[in-house]
Length: 521
Ligand code: BG6
Image (cartoon, rainbow, N blue to C red):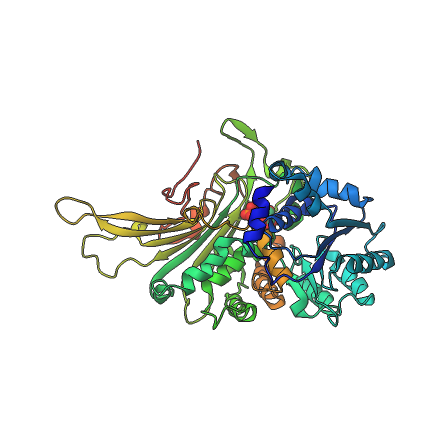
C-alpha cells in the first residue's frame, strides 16, 4: 500500500522499542485473537514495533505456525475489517513474525522444546535476548510457568530484558493475591512483573491524572472542603454472556470493583505525585488505597454495601433472560451482578467525604463515569438551594468520552432565576490524534519497560484488603440480601437508599450531556 509506505517513511520508527520476542502462554485462547493480535497489528500499522519482533504463541493446542497465523491473523474475525483495507504483502510481513509452539498436554511439563524454539527464533530473528512472557492462562499457572522459565534461565536479565505480564483476575482474595505475588516474586523481580488492568490503558483513565495535575483550577477544590461526595458508575448493558461459569464464582465485586474501579478511585483520591515516573505515581496510588476505611463490623457493612442480581425482563420488546438462567450459572446463585459500595478515605484530604461506587451488568446503557459533586454555595444569594443543582464535574470514561462541568447561569429575564448550564469537552474533537486502544497502549508500554499503567504488588494487595471483608460478609452471611432487579433497569429498587440527603444516583444516558434519569421503555 503506497499510503502505508509513505506513512512509514514520514514517521521514524519509535526508537524506544528494542528488538524483542513476545511469548504468549495460552495463545490459543480467546484473548490472543480478540485483543492481543489486533493490538499488535495496530502497533505494526503505526510503526511502533521494533525492527525485529517475534510473537511466539505457546499453548496446548496442536497448531503449526501456518495454522496459528491463519487463526489469529489471516482468518481472524477480529481483524477482518482491518485486513480488507490492507495490502497483501503488508499483511504477510506481519504474519511472518508470528510462530507457534505446542507445549504438550500440561503447562507443568518439560519446557526443553519451548526453550529450544525460543533460542532458535532469537538467533534467527535478532531479538537480542529481550523476552516478554505474556501469561494468558488461569492464575493457578503463574507460578508453575514462572518456575519453568526460571529453571531454564529465561528470567535472568544479564543479556537482555525479561518481563512477565499477567492477566486479571489477580487473585480471588487478599490471601490468594499474596500467594500469587509471592509465587511470581520467587522467580522474577517486582520490576519485571507487569499486572494488567485494562482500565489503566484507557486514554480517559490516564487523563484523570492530567485533568487533576496539569490544571490549577481543579486541584484547589479537590478535597473535603469543596466536594460533597464522589460518585462512580460503571454500567454495562450486556449480561454475563458466555462467561457464566467464571462469573458465578467471581461476581461484580471481584470482576470489576476490586480491580478497575478501585484503580479509578485511587487516581481520584491520590495526592499529587512528585513526577510522572511509574514508581512515584504508583506510590501515591498505594497510599490512597491504604487510606480506604476498611469496613469490619456487620452494621457498617450492612449500611454501606448493596448487592443485586438481574432478573428476566423485556428490553425493547425482546425477552432477556435472568442471571440464574444464564449458561454456567447455578440456578440458585446469589452471586452479585450489581454491587454498590459507600466508603470513606481516611486521610487529611478526604475525611468524611463519601465515595459511592457501583458496577453492574444489564443496565439501561453502557457507561463509566466519575461525578464530582461540589458542595452548594454556603449562602443562597439567589434563593433556596436545590440539592440537584450542585456544581458537578462529570468525567466520562466511556463512551462519548469527555468532560462536563455543570454550573449556574442566570435565566434571561427579570429577577435572578438560576439554571444549570453545561460546559462540555469531547475527546472526539481532538481528531488529529488516534486514540490507542487499551491493549495497544499497555503492550507498547511493556515493550518499552514503562510500568506506570500496570498494577504493583502492594497496590493489588491494598485493594484486596479493602474488598475482602465485604466479600466475606456477603458470602458467609445468610441474612445479606441479594436484591433482584429487572434486566435493563438501574439496579434494585432501593438502590438510592445508599446515598443519603436524597441525592440518589445520577443515572446517566448514552451521551455526556444527557440529563440524569436515563431509562429505556
Ligand atoms: C472485564 C470484566 O475485566 O472488563 C468483564 O471481566 C467486563 O466482565 C469488562 O465486561 C468491561 O470492560 P470494558 O472495557 O468494556 O468496560
